[in-house]
Amino acid sequence: MTAATSHVTAAELAALNKPRRDWRFWLGKTGIFLGMTFIILYCIAPFYWMVVSSLRLPTMGRDTSFWPNPVSFENYPAVFDPINGFGRALVNSVIVSLSTTLVTLLFGILAAYALARLRFRFKGIVLAVIIGCSMFPGITLLIPLFKMFTGAYPWMPINWMNTYQALIIPSLSFGLPLCVWNLTAFFRQLPVELEQAAMVDGCTPGQAFRKVILPLAAPGVFTTAIITFIAVWNEFMIALTFGTQQNMYTAVVAISKFTGAYGFDTPWGTIMAAGVLVTVPLIIGVLIFQRRIVAGLTAGGVK
Image (cartoon, rainbow, N blue to C red; front, side):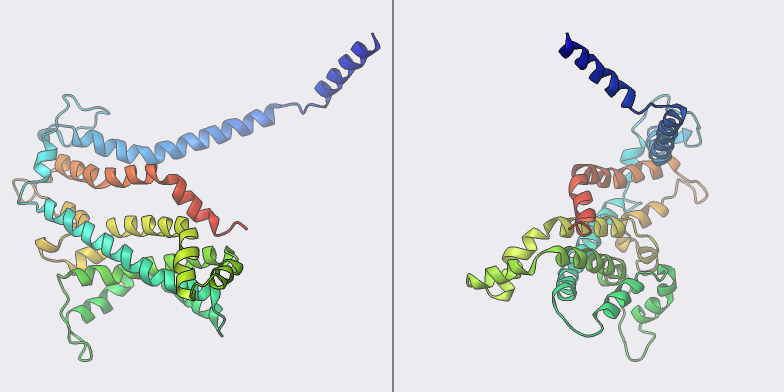
Protein backbone atom coordinates (compact mmCIF):
# COMPACT_ATOMS: atom_id res chain seq x y z
CA MET A 1 0.00 0.00 0.00
CA THR A 2 2.82 2.34 0.87
CA ALA A 3 4.63 1.54 -2.36
CA ALA A 4 1.47 2.18 -4.39
CA THR A 5 0.85 5.44 -2.58
CA SER A 6 4.41 6.61 -3.14
CA HIS A 7 4.12 5.59 -6.81
CA VAL A 8 0.97 7.64 -7.27
CA THR A 9 2.50 10.52 -5.43
CA ALA A 10 5.56 10.45 -7.70
CA ALA A 11 3.34 10.43 -10.77
CA GLU A 12 1.31 13.31 -9.45
CA LEU A 13 4.45 15.28 -8.67
CA ALA A 14 5.76 14.66 -12.18
CA ALA A 15 2.46 15.89 -13.61
CA LEU A 16 2.56 18.99 -11.44
CA ASN A 17 6.17 19.75 -12.37
CA LYS A 18 5.49 19.34 -16.09
CA PRO A 19 5.55 22.77 -17.72
CA ARG A 20 2.15 23.93 -18.86
CA ARG A 21 1.73 24.90 -22.47
CA ASP A 22 -0.27 28.09 -22.29
CA TRP A 23 -1.54 30.25 -25.15
CA ARG A 24 1.87 31.84 -25.64
CA PHE A 25 3.40 28.46 -26.48
CA TRP A 26 0.75 27.69 -29.09
CA LEU A 27 0.93 31.22 -30.45
CA GLY A 28 4.67 30.79 -30.97
CA LYS A 29 4.18 27.43 -32.67
CA THR A 30 1.51 28.89 -34.93
CA GLY A 31 3.76 31.82 -35.83
CA ILE A 32 6.61 29.48 -36.73
CA PHE A 33 4.30 27.34 -38.86
CA LEU A 34 2.88 30.36 -40.68
CA GLY A 35 6.36 31.79 -41.23
CA MET A 36 7.67 28.53 -42.68
CA THR A 37 4.59 28.22 -44.89
CA PHE A 38 5.11 31.75 -46.22
CA ILE A 39 8.80 31.11 -46.97
CA ILE A 40 8.03 27.83 -48.75
CA LEU A 41 5.30 29.40 -50.88
CA TYR A 42 7.52 32.41 -51.61
CA CYS A 43 10.27 30.11 -52.91
CA ILE A 44 8.09 27.63 -54.78
CA ALA A 45 5.55 30.00 -56.36
CA PRO A 46 7.85 31.43 -59.10
CA PHE A 47 9.06 27.98 -60.13
CA TYR A 48 5.51 26.60 -60.10
CA TRP A 49 4.33 29.47 -62.30
CA MET A 50 7.25 28.88 -64.68
CA VAL A 51 6.37 25.19 -65.03
CA VAL A 52 2.65 25.90 -65.50
CA SER A 53 3.33 28.59 -68.10
CA SER A 54 5.62 26.25 -70.02
CA LEU A 55 2.78 23.71 -70.29
CA ARG A 56 0.31 26.11 -71.91
CA LEU A 57 -0.36 26.30 -75.62
CA PRO A 58 1.96 28.78 -77.38
CA THR A 59 -1.07 30.94 -78.15
CA MET A 60 -2.02 31.12 -74.44
CA GLY A 61 1.19 32.68 -73.12
CA ARG A 62 -0.69 35.44 -71.28
CA ASP A 63 -3.19 33.09 -69.60
CA THR A 64 -3.29 33.58 -65.80
CA SER A 65 -5.05 30.37 -64.72
CA PHE A 66 -3.34 28.30 -62.02
CA TRP A 67 -3.34 25.17 -64.18
CA PRO A 68 -3.01 24.91 -67.98
CA ASN A 69 -6.03 23.67 -69.87
CA PRO A 70 -5.21 21.87 -72.04
CA VAL A 71 -1.72 20.69 -71.06
CA SER A 72 0.69 21.07 -73.96
CA PHE A 73 4.39 20.28 -74.43
CA GLU A 74 4.76 22.24 -77.66
CA ASN A 75 6.98 24.85 -76.04
CA TYR A 76 9.78 22.41 -75.21
CA PRO A 77 10.68 21.40 -78.80
CA ALA A 78 10.48 25.10 -79.72
CA VAL A 79 13.27 25.83 -77.23
CA PHE A 80 15.72 23.89 -79.42
CA ASP A 81 14.76 25.65 -82.63
CA PRO A 82 18.08 26.31 -84.43
CA ILE A 83 17.24 30.01 -84.65
CA ASN A 84 17.48 30.23 -80.84
CA GLY A 85 20.87 28.53 -80.56
CA PHE A 86 19.87 27.09 -77.19
CA GLY A 87 21.70 23.78 -77.61
CA ARG A 88 25.04 25.53 -78.18
CA ALA A 89 24.25 27.89 -75.30
CA LEU A 90 23.81 24.94 -72.94
CA VAL A 91 27.18 23.56 -74.01
CA ASN A 92 28.77 26.98 -73.41
CA SER A 93 27.23 27.17 -69.93
CA VAL A 94 28.60 23.74 -69.04
CA ILE A 95 32.09 24.62 -70.33
CA VAL A 96 32.24 27.98 -68.55
CA SER A 97 30.76 26.69 -65.28
CA LEU A 98 32.96 23.60 -65.07
CA SER A 99 36.12 25.48 -66.07
CA THR A 100 35.50 28.25 -63.56
CA THR A 101 34.78 25.73 -60.82
CA LEU A 102 37.93 23.71 -61.51
CA VAL A 103 40.19 26.78 -61.67
CA THR A 104 38.60 28.15 -58.50
CA LEU A 105 39.23 24.92 -56.62
CA LEU A 106 42.80 24.59 -57.92
CA PHE A 107 43.94 28.02 -56.73
CA GLY A 108 41.49 28.37 -53.84
CA ILE A 109 42.52 25.14 -52.11
CA LEU A 110 46.22 26.02 -52.27
CA ALA A 111 45.65 29.58 -51.06
CA ALA A 112 43.36 28.47 -48.24
CA TYR A 113 45.83 25.82 -47.07
CA ALA A 114 48.66 28.37 -47.05
CA LEU A 115 46.59 30.86 -45.05
CA ALA A 116 45.56 28.17 -42.58
CA ARG A 117 48.97 26.57 -42.03
CA LEU A 118 51.78 28.98 -42.88
CA ARG A 119 52.91 31.72 -40.54
CA PHE A 120 53.76 35.03 -42.17
CA ARG A 121 53.21 38.70 -41.52
CA PHE A 122 49.98 40.40 -42.51
CA LYS A 123 48.20 37.10 -43.00
CA GLY A 124 44.98 38.56 -41.60
CA ILE A 125 45.24 41.53 -43.95
CA VAL A 126 45.70 39.23 -46.94
CA LEU A 127 42.58 37.28 -46.02
CA ALA A 128 40.63 40.50 -45.48
CA VAL A 129 41.69 41.80 -48.91
CA ILE A 130 40.62 38.56 -50.56
CA ILE A 131 37.19 38.76 -48.94
CA GLY A 132 36.95 42.48 -49.66
CA CYS A 133 37.42 41.87 -53.37
CA SER A 134 34.16 39.94 -53.45
CA MET A 135 32.23 42.89 -52.01
CA PHE A 136 32.58 45.07 -55.11
CA PRO A 137 29.39 45.05 -57.22
CA GLY A 138 30.08 43.06 -60.34
CA ILE A 139 28.69 45.76 -62.60
CA THR A 140 31.42 48.20 -61.48
CA LEU A 141 34.06 45.90 -62.99
CA LEU A 142 32.44 45.56 -66.41
CA ILE A 143 33.84 48.74 -67.98
CA PRO A 144 37.49 48.15 -66.93
CA LEU A 145 37.25 44.52 -68.00
CA PHE A 146 35.62 45.49 -71.29
CA LYS A 147 38.47 47.89 -72.06
CA MET A 148 41.02 45.23 -71.15
CA PHE A 149 39.41 42.53 -73.27
CA THR A 150 39.05 44.82 -76.31
CA GLY A 151 42.69 45.93 -76.28
CA ALA A 152 41.96 49.52 -75.27
CA TYR A 153 44.99 49.59 -72.96
CA PRO A 154 48.40 49.80 -74.73
CA TRP A 155 50.01 47.69 -72.02
CA MET A 156 47.50 44.87 -72.59
CA PRO A 157 46.95 44.46 -76.36
CA ILE A 158 44.57 41.50 -76.28
CA ASN A 159 41.20 40.85 -77.85
CA TRP A 160 39.26 38.37 -75.76
CA MET A 161 35.75 39.36 -76.73
CA ASN A 162 33.58 36.34 -77.57
CA THR A 163 36.07 33.88 -76.08
CA TYR A 164 35.75 31.43 -73.21
CA GLN A 165 38.50 33.07 -71.21
CA ALA A 166 36.55 36.34 -71.22
CA LEU A 167 33.65 34.51 -69.58
CA ILE A 168 35.72 32.42 -67.17
CA ILE A 169 38.28 34.84 -65.72
CA PRO A 170 35.82 37.51 -64.49
CA SER A 171 33.71 34.81 -62.84
CA LEU A 172 36.69 33.86 -60.70
CA SER A 173 36.21 37.11 -58.78
CA PHE A 174 33.26 35.47 -57.03
CA GLY A 175 34.46 31.90 -56.78
CA LEU A 176 37.98 32.44 -55.43
CA PRO A 177 37.09 34.57 -52.35
CA LEU A 178 34.32 32.14 -51.42
CA CYS A 179 36.60 29.14 -51.83
CA VAL A 180 39.47 30.70 -49.86
CA TRP A 181 37.22 31.88 -47.02
CA ASN A 182 35.33 28.61 -46.67
CA LEU A 183 38.32 26.30 -46.92
CA THR A 184 40.59 28.41 -44.70
CA ALA A 185 38.14 27.90 -41.84
CA PHE A 186 37.92 24.22 -42.73
CA PHE A 187 41.69 23.64 -42.78
CA ARG A 188 42.14 25.49 -39.50
CA GLN A 189 39.97 23.03 -37.64
CA LEU A 190 42.04 20.05 -38.81
CA PRO A 191 44.79 19.22 -36.27
CA VAL A 192 48.35 19.87 -37.39
CA GLU A 193 49.28 16.56 -35.76
CA LEU A 194 47.68 14.74 -38.70
CA GLU A 195 50.30 16.09 -41.09
CA GLN A 196 53.08 15.59 -38.58
CA ALA A 197 52.10 11.95 -38.11
CA ALA A 198 51.99 11.42 -41.88
CA MET A 199 55.47 12.91 -42.28
CA VAL A 200 56.77 10.70 -39.47
CA ASP A 201 55.50 7.75 -41.52
CA GLY A 202 57.57 8.91 -44.48
CA CYS A 203 55.27 11.30 -46.37
CA THR A 204 56.54 14.55 -47.81
CA PRO A 205 54.55 17.71 -46.96
CA GLY A 206 52.90 17.51 -50.37
CA GLN A 207 51.95 13.86 -49.88
CA ALA A 208 50.60 14.59 -46.40
CA PHE A 209 48.41 17.31 -47.85
CA ARG A 210 47.22 15.20 -50.77
CA LYS A 211 46.68 11.91 -48.93
CA VAL A 212 45.57 13.08 -45.48
CA ILE A 213 44.32 16.66 -45.38
CA LEU A 214 42.59 16.92 -48.75
CA PRO A 215 40.35 13.85 -48.24
CA LEU A 216 39.29 15.19 -44.83
CA ALA A 217 38.44 18.55 -46.43
CA ALA A 218 36.25 16.90 -49.08
CA PRO A 219 32.92 18.21 -47.63
CA GLY A 220 34.14 21.81 -47.76
CA VAL A 221 35.62 21.37 -51.23
CA PHE A 222 32.42 19.77 -52.51
CA THR A 223 30.25 22.54 -51.07
CA THR A 224 32.42 25.25 -52.59
CA ALA A 225 32.32 23.51 -55.97
CA ILE A 226 28.51 23.27 -55.95
CA ILE A 227 27.99 26.90 -54.92
CA THR A 228 30.52 28.18 -57.46
CA PHE A 229 29.02 26.10 -60.27
CA ILE A 230 25.49 27.34 -59.54
CA ALA A 231 26.62 30.97 -59.32
CA VAL A 232 28.47 30.82 -62.65
CA TRP A 233 25.65 28.88 -64.32
CA ASN A 234 23.18 31.64 -63.40
CA GLU A 235 25.55 34.55 -64.13
CA PHE A 236 24.11 37.03 -66.64
CA MET A 237 25.90 40.40 -66.80
CA ILE A 238 29.38 39.08 -67.59
CA ALA A 239 28.07 36.60 -70.15
CA LEU A 240 25.94 39.28 -71.82
CA THR A 241 28.78 41.81 -71.97
CA PHE A 242 31.64 39.63 -73.20
CA GLY A 243 29.70 37.11 -75.28
CA THR A 244 28.01 39.21 -77.95
CA GLN A 245 27.89 36.59 -80.70
CA GLN A 246 25.24 33.88 -80.67
CA ASN A 247 27.79 31.07 -80.73
CA MET A 248 29.16 32.36 -77.40
CA TYR A 249 25.84 32.87 -75.61
CA THR A 250 25.38 31.03 -72.33
CA ALA A 251 21.98 29.53 -71.50
CA VAL A 252 20.66 32.50 -69.52
CA VAL A 253 21.74 34.96 -72.22
CA ALA A 254 20.20 32.82 -74.96
CA ILE A 255 16.89 32.79 -73.08
CA SER A 256 16.91 36.59 -72.89
CA LYS A 257 17.32 36.73 -76.68
CA PHE A 258 14.32 34.54 -77.51
CA THR A 259 11.95 36.17 -79.98
CA GLY A 260 8.73 35.08 -81.61
CA ALA A 261 7.67 35.10 -85.23
CA TYR A 262 7.84 38.89 -85.15
CA GLY A 263 10.33 41.20 -83.47
CA PHE A 264 7.73 42.51 -81.02
CA ASP A 265 6.35 39.07 -80.20
CA THR A 266 7.52 37.59 -76.87
CA PRO A 267 7.25 33.75 -76.74
CA TRP A 268 6.48 33.44 -73.04
CA GLY A 269 5.81 29.72 -73.21
CA THR A 270 9.15 29.00 -74.89
CA ILE A 271 11.01 31.24 -72.45
CA MET A 272 9.40 29.48 -69.48
CA ALA A 273 10.18 26.05 -70.94
CA ALA A 274 13.83 27.04 -71.38
CA GLY A 275 13.87 28.31 -67.79
CA VAL A 276 12.61 24.93 -66.59
CA LEU A 277 15.28 23.09 -68.57
CA VAL A 278 18.00 25.30 -67.09
CA THR A 279 16.71 25.17 -63.50
CA VAL A 280 15.62 21.56 -63.00
CA PRO A 281 19.14 20.00 -63.18
CA LEU A 282 20.38 22.43 -60.51
CA ILE A 283 17.42 21.68 -58.23
CA ILE A 284 17.92 17.93 -58.60
CA GLY A 285 21.63 18.27 -57.87
CA VAL A 286 21.04 20.37 -54.75
CA LEU A 287 18.37 17.96 -53.46
CA ILE A 288 20.68 14.97 -53.97
CA PHE A 289 23.71 16.58 -52.31
CA GLN A 290 21.98 18.82 -49.76
CA ARG A 291 23.47 16.94 -46.80
CA ARG A 292 26.99 17.37 -48.13
CA ILE A 293 26.34 21.05 -48.81
CA VAL A 294 25.06 21.69 -45.28
CA ALA A 295 27.92 19.66 -43.79
CA GLY A 296 30.47 21.66 -45.75
CA LEU A 297 28.97 25.01 -44.78
CA THR A 298 28.80 24.21 -41.07
CA ALA A 299 31.92 22.09 -40.58
CA GLY A 300 34.29 25.04 -40.72
CA GLY A 301 32.70 26.62 -37.65
CA VAL A 302 32.45 23.49 -35.48
CA LYS A 303 35.31 22.29 -33.34
